[in-house]
Length: 259
Image (cartoon, rainbow, N blue to C red; front, side, top):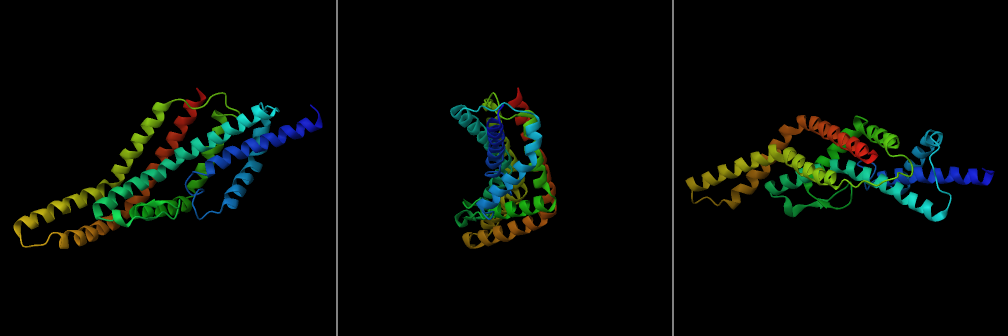
């Protein structure tokens, strides 16, 4: 191999590693927050690429030198990063779903705010849970585990993978798990507010002269915040279990992709 070909191979490998990390950072929690500038994300992906480059280079992965095959490999690497990032993003989707259920029961549905993390319209309780979960992840260095999980992907999905994930049943089950966990996370507050609805209904039957609409909304809001305050000590443990579950999904994806 001539010097020109050697330089081309090394540059091509660097770009492929960068593409996978850029795809993951575009979607993963913490890294994909709207408050993180695009140049910072790109710099983070490039920095990690520089660190991992000698390790990946030692495996001597096959890289095509022709233009069209190389573009196809670049697309596959970006897809690998996006799939992993999307799977990690499901943790945020669970928190948003739980917040949507809580907002619906508390009467905050019409007051959906702009998500400060991803810049889209989302429930207020979902915003609160996402911000709190992000702070917990940063405080406990959980984002390091996201990076470690991404590094582990090269052991299961090498550069230029021969196949793409085709097990659609896994993604269908993933969506079901996201909905189920969102309901479980919201159920303490959702169930308590449902009981308050029943209590206000019985009160209305007892005192027909009472205007239910002037009573139920303040009661539900105050009662919802009280239950939310009481459940805060258990929120960290819930986020930890969700994070462990999310990492198990990532490992399951790697093992299924390798087969």
